[in-house]
Length: 501
Image (cartoon, rainbow, N blue to C red; front, side, top):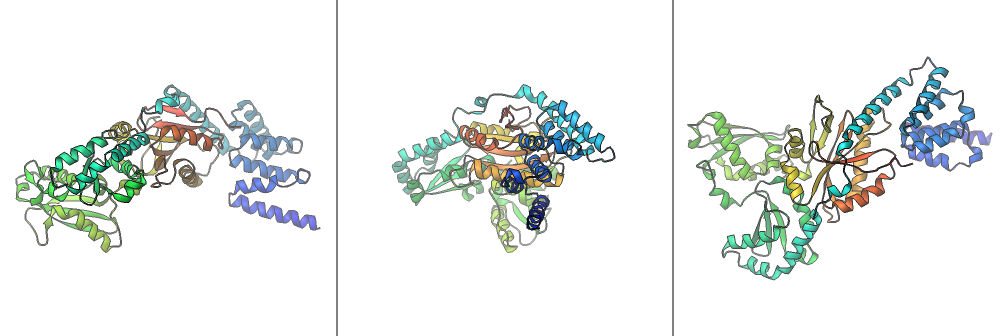
């Protein structure tokens, strides 16, 4: 009686684990039971857990251990047929699935799996077609990685630190010469950034609307040697200083003379801008809006424009309470604070959701149904076959790439979202490292789900180290992962070159 009660408690516990989809715990629980106490039902539960954790060889071995008891059980044949499918043993798949139908011809339990087999067969054909783009790993290795270039910059900075300190204390004298000298140190990384020295050892990297640098410079700053961090205040500015902007003109119209007001919609978190200047009055509305948009790109980062600006409209006469367009950033920030929000300038700190409708093409990423990203520029450029951001990253020694893969056995589409996010979290924790820690080798930019593949977008600072770490992670998975350049028709690497058994 006592043994029966213990076994009932065991099955109740296992049923709960299965309902909660805790398959790893099921494997652990059953594996700890002595072999002489295992029965057929426990072995079936164990094999099912192996299938759901993609351990197909283990599932097959478990099922074969009770083959005599399972010979007349359609469930046994159905399960081992699934396992053989994912081990690419198609002859045994047909044999076992047919036997399952023979034993239970009334059930429609296998129809979904047959459809799933057809889907994976199509994916296999698609991967065979992509094979012409497969390259060895060395073709993804830049001559000097971004990590190498960051090290070179800080070596240069330390070697010239005494002169930089002197320039900082005398920054009123010939600022262009100072900026030119500091920018020389950045040449190993990029020439798309200006460096400004100010009193009290302040160093500011000015991006001048090059938003891709938001994804690189935080890492650069975090890698500053301790003695530099203790002495210098280093920051990033999205645009030029106010004094420089005030003197700028766009097509002959001084920016500082443009007046502005706005309406804010807290629900959409966006602003509608209304601007005025006599210089706009003779223009067509589209021409005026285009010119004003150019001004905004000088004043604000691309990310702020995308996140917060809804519409722009020219006014034919000024209205009360208009302010100089030079105050726009400050006014936006203050308005957001009134609603308990902080203005996000760095695009890498926020993700934007996006959706697509399947295009009539078999190109990678065109199957995406929905996703989220902190680098919308690249997502948009990819589908327009533009490579500006990709090449900017490449020229800095960083690699803009994406992983793609197929969850091999998950017919519940709702659960795929959880699987994708769990896998991305695992990737960040085990491979990339915590963002902003100075120990990371890259950052995750987002993820997306498609009708064929799952995608995770990555910016890698140190590609050789990434390859070392990813191997240790992917050996736990028995299905294929691929890494592609973030551009159409880019090169592809098959990361795990064989199925792990």
